[in-house]
Length: 339
Image (cartoon, rainbow, N blue to C red):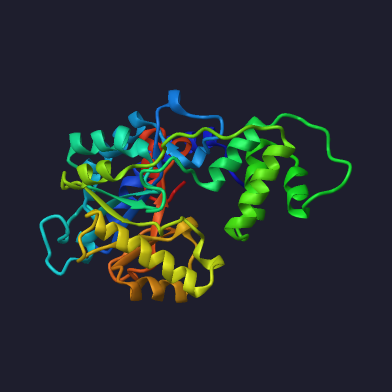
């Protein structure tokens, strides 16, 4: 049975009151380490109707997270877990290691997360889809969400059109249910078909062009943050395509082009370039291709802590978002995998 957010909040307060989360975290020190997965850091005033609940954390909540992590963890850069040289930060300790990662390279990382990281001198790794850096483009999933929140009821055409379009237009339920079902139908299709369906949906639902504004980092911002010694970067492919749906040649192209651009722009150190699987989807062959391309580690969306000897090309993470971590008690329960 799934608990509501309010019920989880009550449970978290109880568990924290009796010390279970802290005991769980202390028990894992020395044998396991934690990688956190964030996406966006956004104040409530900047949330859009189509911003997904699992995609953001409020800046004040994020600062609370950082204060908690500094108290109970060693917060280290990703590369230090794979360094041959043990430092004071990655040597055995009574506090487990924690690594902060951010997917997609959103512009709000520069606006709201970076100042908090600088203030607290805490490192993080940002995974960039290099084809989107500095552009006004947006992911097709975000454009689909925008369409579903702005649709104008129109009469159904007399003649049925594209069967996939008809299936998406006919999805019933609340916004989140419709969005999830539509993404599920589209994510296995190629780019051209997805674009055709989105264009047809806009016409079908009476919607004009989506907002044309920059929502991703640009290379000047990347270089500025990289120069701080706190923010590191990795690849999230070039076009943010789900690799398990591509032919092997296309996978290799996505991997190689992204690395080439990261190196060209001076965003990464050639000695350690990490990778992040879009949507978390990969298989053993793709993991091998990531390694063959020259990446040194790869993170997934598999949930959990990592052991010191875990495979570096299928690293697990714990997803962090506002509705599940808004209080200190909920956050620590999330880290301890109790919620």
